[in-house]
Length: 64
Image: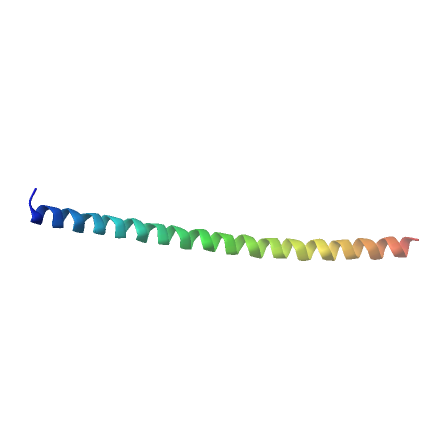
């Protein structure tokens, strides 16, 4: 194998690696967006739980 073949092989490997890195970066962006969406949903659920718990306590106190 000549020097040219080795250089060509190395360049090909770098190009393939760059493509894989770019695909991983895109996948990470999608996953990060999903995580942020889920975080927002959890925050809304926590707020609803606190409101309902507070309303239940008030109702319980008024009932006594």
